[in-house]
Image (tube, rainbow, N blue to C red):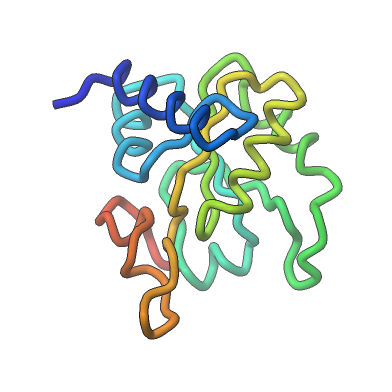
Length: 150
């Protein structure tokens, strides 16, 4: 079994190879291991409140919208909320639906000294499958990780 250190090293190498501006890029199962085994690790779900209500939530995640529903405009207080709720000295893992908004969130956080920021690749629902549906081809949900429906 991989150690937490080797998972983080792999995530950091992945981020470098992808040219990402934050510390690392994790697969869902890797993120879950870190959250389970690293007491200081913090999970931030940046999906909209509507997505959380309709699609599902991850128990224990801090929920801070990056974009505000229904306008899907940037949350003007995203960084303020993040700074109030999250310890910037500890690892912070960002997740969204597919990994795109959480990548933006990790980049924004890194720019304001959250130096241990990671994006969770594939997000909560992963990419669309052949039928244009999410939740079956990758992501937190498809990996069988803990989540609840509202």
